[in-house]
Length: 282
Length: 116
Image 1 (cartoon, one colour):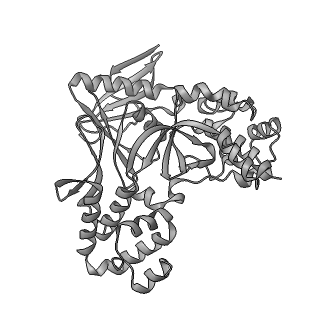
Image 2: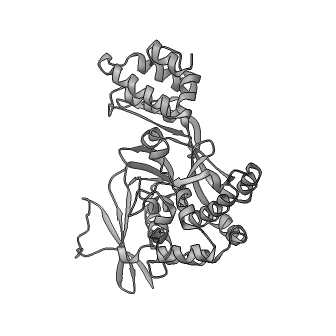
Image 3: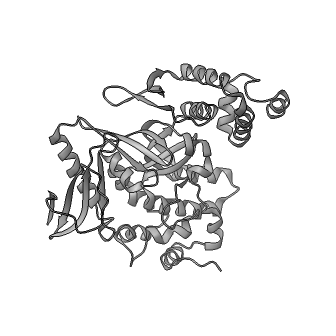
């Protein structure tokens, strides 16, 4: 029998949750676990209000305080009758059943937007607001998912049922991955920085600013890619093997990075023919 | 009752103050609940600190708002600040004030809050 907080025990009894069953489903991921390149080099893109499914919000950056990678283990740090204001302020949510939770929280969705970070398509984490609600919604979703798992139609219906409005910021993967390649190929020089470019009204222009040795240039995505290639071509040969090994590792690790490399970079730039042929399925 | 004012005496508590920083305090019923620092650093203009026992009560947002008002009085058109990337509470406050992330390096994130 798994040890859980008193608050979660009451919650699970109230809503007929099988703790052992849901514990396995309640694992969450942080940014670093989902994509190390985004953790280290992430550049944020546009923010927009949109509808997403709780099914696609698979965690948050839990590595603060005493939190771990499971919603149930972390439950008490968000909900505790005898705790701090942070732990007591949302206790009322624990009463909501699976049938009513969406309706009961609907006003809060409008008035205090849940904020997400979209790392890759349909792969999101909670960013800076909505952790309490996320726990409740995700646990109700998982409870219902456990009952219908394997039935594709019912799983899809559940995805739709748990659609919520969020304010979502997308990671700009082109800029992020270019940044990784540029900084890595420069041997982690402090003299080069890549960041978003903003107009005079502080709106994203879609371009990047590359600051190198005190000089700043503004580049479109296509120009940034060409700039990246030129940086790789000029790379110190002493670090090339190490650089290629790093790129190959992440090429194998992250589908979105593989897509990025396959789309924008020609063969031969990183891999030996043997490695490339193997990875590209030839 | 909440009061916000410039600290005009020496701090008795151990709080890290940068040179040439102005220190403001947020008080409730004559008890200091937090500090606001207006720094002379372009890249990190504001810092706030709410005492542990007063956290999670919305005081951070109030104090931040007061600090923004002070900066506007000085005539700054934007505020830059650098925070730890794990500091979700201040990130939430920054986003409420339409802050935009400029960069993230070495575990720190740099934000800009336009004031016009």
